[in-house]
Image 1 (tube, helix red, strand yellow):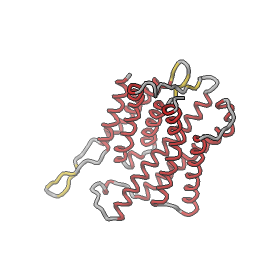
Image 2 (cartoon, rainbow, N blue to C red):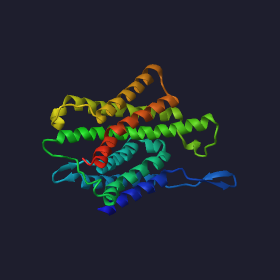
Image 3 (cartoon, rainbow, N blue to C red):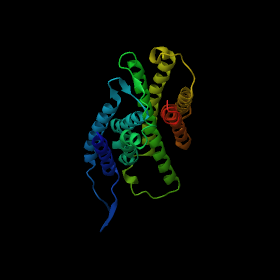
Image 4 (cartoon, helix red, strand yellow):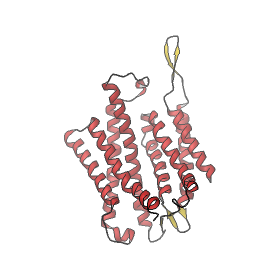
Length: 281
């Protein structure tokens, strides 16, 4: 089993190296870019995703239900982050971002084997959903995790755009700038990710509030998880409204994206860390 995790992580790392802009070499007529087999990355990443998905299935599908404990949830989000970046075309539009996203997925796929081995007591708290009566709850969590993955990709892209804007503002040279798409193109791509993630987050919150007793067998209560989720929803909602009404863009909009992503991260994974690792529930 551990070999599958290591193989998936190695494929992610190799894909990140392939997608990273090749260094330039001095030639007789100026800088010459050293070619790399970029198409190889388009084959390596699906292989990494398949192995990662296999490990997720092996870890989460148990005889007693779906185990969505902290390490399994992080691994699943890591796989979804890589899948969103690949399926959305972001890695084709901006291949260098793979050097940020794919190492995150590589670490995520290793966590289910590393953390329980390092501290079995802290990470031995399964959080299972039964296949029959709680299948709707598992679907609810799955939609939430997809929305979180989209926001994570959006936040990483926002950090890249902020860095590019800073370099342009200070007129700093960038040897890879010729291969980069225009910033406005990246911003439009970014807000599409945020809009889709916002729709999924809205569905998650609406289903959780309206059908909480059917999903989880208990009435709605306001916890840290629900508070952070609502704060994230309000942040992204205000951002999209400001974008539509006033054309918000630039550093202010990008900071809103990062803040909203932090809220939704704390809502699920942060809450699970406190409950499962700190409190041992």
